[in-house]
Amino acid sequence: MKQKLFYTNEGKILLTGLLLSLLLLIVIGYFATIDIEIAKTLGLTFFVHSFGGRAAGIGLCIMNGFGPVVTIVYNFYLEALIVCFTYSIFVLTTNNYIKVIWVTNLMQRLAQKAVEQKDKVESYGWIGLFLFVMLPLPVTGPVMGSVIGYMLKVNLFKNFSATGSGTFSAIVVWFFCFDFLEQRFHVIQYVFAGIVILALLSRRKAIIKFFFGKKN
Image 1: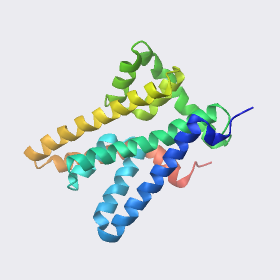
Image 2: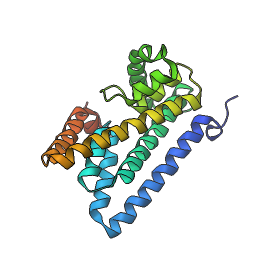
Image 3: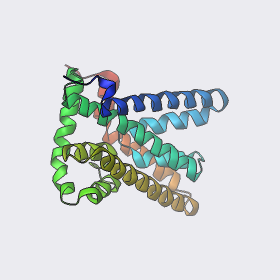
C-alpha cells in the first residue's frame, strides 16, 4: 500500500516547492507596489532560471544594481525552488503517484538525458555530482544533477547537499566573474544582454511550447 503523497519525502519536497513559490509571489507582488523595476527584475530572473539560464539570471541582477548578497541568495533560492518541483515530480511520476500524460512524457525525456550523463558522475560519487552541477555546461545543473543522484540511488541528504553546494559555488563564481568584468569594462552590460538572449534562444522550443502548446 502506497503512502499518502505528502507523507513521502518527495511529497514533502513538492510541498516545500509550493511554499517557496508562494513566498516568491508575495515578494514580487510587494515590490510591484513600491518599485516596479525591482519586481520586473525578480520576475525576469525567475523566468530565465526556469529555462536553464543560471548565468543569465545572475547577470540580470548585477545589471539592475543588486548587491552580492541579494544576487547570490536570490539566484540560489530560485534554483532550490526549481529543483524542489522538478525532482519531486520526477520521483512521484516514476513511482506512479502522478499519472498525467504530458508530465510523464516530460519526465521521460528528462530521464533519457540523465541516463546519458550518469556514467560521468557514478565513478566519483559525491564529488562527481558536485562538479557536475557546478560546471557551466549545457547539460549540467542542479535539476539534472538531482535526477542523476536519484538514479544512482544516492541518499537524499547526499544528493541535495551535493547539488545544493554545487549550485551555490557556481553562483558565487559567476557573480564575482561578472562583477569583476563590470567594474572594468562598461561593455559588460551588452555581454549580459547577449547571455540572456542566448539563454532564451537555446530554450526557444521549450518556451514556445510552454506558452502556446505543441502544434499538431
